Length: 181
Image (cartoon, rainbow, N blue to C red):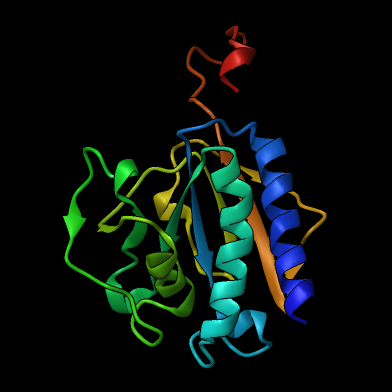
């Protein structure tokens, strides 16, 4: 199962990188229920091993491209995010360290896996992966566009992905710059 989780997570990250045309310096918000991955209801079976496996697989893909992960904590930490301090410029840093049962196993794995982690209150990410219905939408830039992934599950958890694009203005007949998409 470990290999399958890592492979599924890597595949989802690779698909999102392509679909969102992610570039170095951009941010992907990731919400991850290790309970759902393990086949349990969200919040009922946090699993540190699963959190580490999925974080490491995603981080391998995103870090290789210079893309930052913002790991969303659970509601016990008010959906704060764990990011590399280098990505926190201009953001409100909060005093929180996620743990297995307070913040979530995935966020705790991110805190341990980043070279210089920081917790921030909120973020406006360029893309997102929601693993297990964790509700990441509050941390995405407007306008969010759904991305349908072939890697639609990690373990037992449903994976939902999104990219963002600039708002269109000027109505239906307005021209837009495709380079911004």
